[in-house]
Image 1: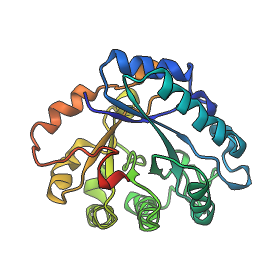
Image 2: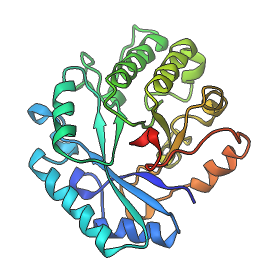
Image 3: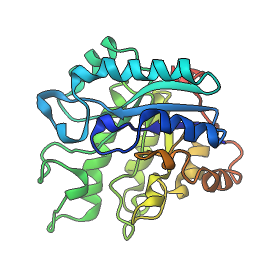
Image 4: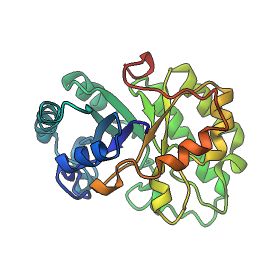
Length: 259
């Protein structure tokens, strides 16, 4: 099975189980590598209810180091899921310099200026067409990618509504995002958590696979596990789909794209 490069811990305040249980589940599934990528703290207590505090980061890394010593049969990486949010770039840069993360995966959960605490899932713009709403999100993604701070874009089409596929509504902008990913030698995560949700599809939708092959963008797998039993969730489903795209490269942390 492919490596799982998107796993959370209960430090984020909305995950369950002990950290060693995630490792043991991966070993049971014969997953060769995992990365813990819990949510990064943000300035001014921004969204503090869903992430660890800044003073917990050292303990988080120490927890992972202890796991490495206790479970030598599996490779365990210390990563972080870092929200891109306009104005927090300097904070992220300083945090990445201070702490030795093996990988940084970029997400966009908040868009500055949006209502309801800027939360992507709570947007309500009754007088705006969907392509404009998607455009706000895609432009935020692009700004984050262009910082050069990150290794992987996770759950790329998180904002999508199944009735309005992102590829149909904003294809030109989406292609521009892929061009930026390629320019910065990043990978795109195939995140299986959507298969556990109402949307019932991966992030991004697997209809993007031909474009990832065309643009020669490498991929990683991420379960976005918030419970130990979710590690490696539905990876077989994605591997089966990938069999139709033999030129898509799977990126690992040992390759240049994730260094």
